[in-house]
Length: 108
Image (cartoon, rainbow, N blue to C red; front, side, top):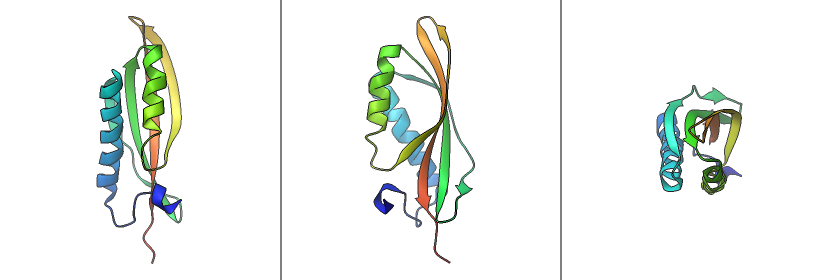
C-alpha cells in the first residue's frame, strides 16, 4: 500500500501537480475537455495526507468510460471523492469532481 502513496519526502505541491498533470494528460488522450482544474488544501489524516485536485470537464458520454479507465491506471492510489454530473451542453456532459491522491506523512 505504501508504494501506492506519494513519498513523505515529496513536496505537497509537486504531488498535487503530478495528479493534475496526469489527469490532464488522460483527458487530452481521450478527447475530454478540461474546463477548470484547481488544487485543494492538503488534509492531514494521521499517517497520511489527502491531496485533493478539483476538475470540471466536458465530454461525450462514450468518452467518459475510457477517461476513467485510464485514470485508474495511475501508479498511485487515486480516489474520486465527489462527482457531480451537470446538464448536457451540445450533447456533452459537464462533470465536476475531486480526485484525491495520498501522501505518507513524515515520521516525527
